[in-house]
Length: 210
Image (tube, rainbow, N blue to C red; front, side, top):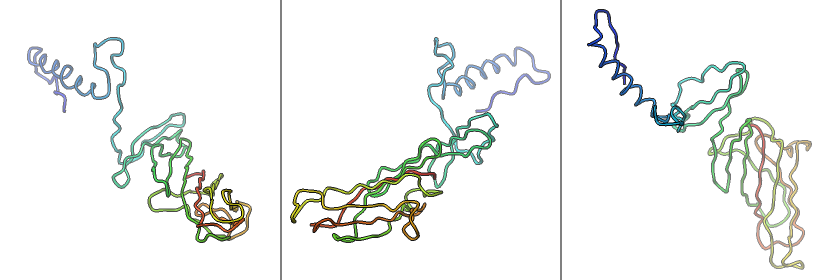
């Protein structure tokens, strides 16, 4: 809502007084109340009660010793961005998904956490690659710096019924290709200690930059 353009050349106080009053009482006060406690309402007057960040067409210019928080929209989805200093990288600190099969969460500082739930191709020993990438989650920009896999508890027929039956090894960053851990995939080696009643389900989680 536009403010009244007053005073103009030639206008008298009697003419501009109600317009100036309307600027302050109606226009300025109404817009101020969107994110702030109203004027003249006690000790908390003027303090924030919420923050609305509109989508910007461009990222704002951040000074060398400034911290910027702003909203960007990609594909119709808003994201809260945090940037420390003009040389810092803008980080999405709101993105996440709560899906068991493959999900992610962004942390401040640029950390990307991804997790998943996968099924082995066989109930016997195997070695195979699993991808970190999926259209529903962001990708790592570099090799993850932490990776962990946990098997589900396996029970059933066999000489050690009721006990865990398998061992899973994740090939790390020092492994040779194609077993090396990369930003796109991890390689799993599975050793069946005894006959398994079914293929192995396992959970994985990885931390890196994204």
